[in-house]
Length: 612
Image 1 (tube, helix red, strand yellow):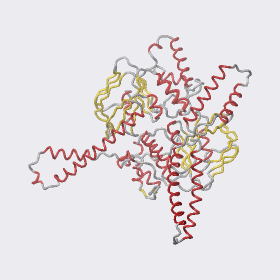
Image 2 (image 1 turned 90 degrees about the vertical axis):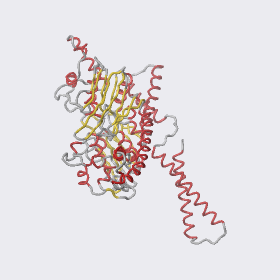
Image 3 (image 1 turned 60 degrees about the vertical axis):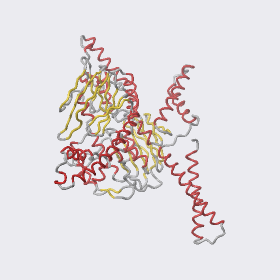
Image 4 (image 1 turned 60 degrees about the horizontal axis):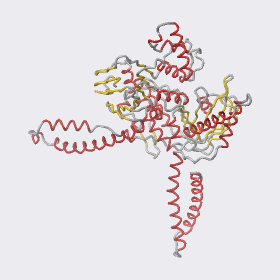
């Protein structure tokens, strides 16, 4: 049954068309993910469906009697109120809770219950100074409390920690509501959605299936577009020759052929180059063997411990993810490393060659009245790429999906995602050898995320990444710092999914154990912690899983070993041939060098393949 019908919907912003003549039917129970490059109109589309924004032309028909709830990217609660009162003020009250004081009390209790499920235990706390994550939880509670028939969600996972994301994921999987959502969280899309809509070049394309299915079908569409573009350009070359003839030579030709020429010329202007853009631009500056050492770092805010005697030595090329609940101190951790927040005890010893590139949640303040190209040109007039080529700011910005017309936009006209992409560009263009990324995936579109992941996989420097994006962590990090609270930091050897699987296994074992025996004393919490630490220390060896970087290193090693062994065999054959050898000293030195190289490479190969 159709819940929502969209016919010939068109929307422009100024002289720019976002999408035109869109016709789409949304069935009851559909769970639809909306994907597009930042600035393409994803949020605008949701706001139109929610009745928050006008459109140029078309028709939107909603089945009678359906309740619609909308979650905006930005929360706007009345300051000075307790959390519960601010939520009750903003949330729509279903008709069944409007008849009596008892109904109002039940509705209030329902809101308190949902807030608790979202991790807000003190509903009487003031709204003032609540974090972005807390405000997002409040907004989600306001959206879901009425059990709407249609739920419109704009970046629902932004600012949430992983625990709450997984709660919301489970809630939406079970929900019978029709859902349309804009999100960059690819695991979220994959596990919740049964349909994907992509906005691309002012059109909308619908794909039945989850995110992984969409990726396959999208690639097929792009390849088909590429083939069509090649055909159009071949035809255009022939028509161009005809058009270049003297007017009298084609005077008798049909007008339709002239019209066809101009149509082909327009179609040939489609640019598919953004599909092949990559961010492998910056040659990370040299970084020495000493990266940084943390010695006995402790930090507290009142009674709240962030770190307690934290000690760690960071190695060259290491990429670590940091996870933990909101408010546990993840951002404070990296601000201490950068010297932006003082520690209470201990010291950071940072190597002299370390050159940080810091992408913060807060971002930087651009001059709103400057154009994109002018803002970047003021910072640098030339960027050196990894292969030594030199790019102008205009060329550089195109690698970050800012077309030449986009570069002429004033910054105040950019979407939130476009601003974050511009900020990312300014961080990477400085050639850092140690990247610190604090929630880098918030507000970035999926295209940019893919490019950033590809860049990070090839990045030769070090990185610390604070992120709730499970897909991003799985693809990038070598291991994870789990900040558990009260100053406790556990170092887990693996990515996020490895850690999640281990914790689920541990929980299952503890549940089985508790069902077979009753607790014997009041020290259960301490005993449980000791059991967990013992389990981590003594867990049976698992099959080794190489990171993306290690996989690439192993492939390169195998190629190098083959070439080195071949060269060594050639020299041995030469030495054993009895023939006169020119430059024998250099060849003997090279032979000794080859043996040392082979020993080194083979040892590293054994390290990588041990346990596979």
